[in-house]
Length: 155
Image (cartoon, rainbow, N blue to C red; front, side, top):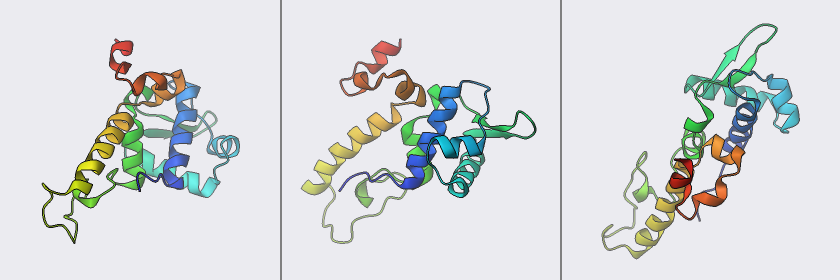
């Protein structure tokens, strides 16, 4: 059990990382993203529309048209995108902020030892995914995230 990333979320992250690497203001053609990152174009079209609807990317028509990031890459976190594509990050319904539901067979959430262990896993997962931006992934700052030095390194 744990966070199982959907194909949709993986494709979204790959496309967003490509746009982030291209740099601010540069647009990428859907066909180029699809080809270079092995994403089926019809699926990518739908993902990019979802991301546009949520204010993550923008599209531009014409000769220099394509998609680009609407927000700075440093403000787009892995957690944000996974939630948009897949919903809750929680491994148990009783840990979800977005879709909380008491477990059907639960007598007491406060006394549930299973919940306590998975709450630790969930909290760490959320900390890492919400604390990791596209910029962090591109710049190779991932080795600093796990040991709590990331914030100090970014100052």
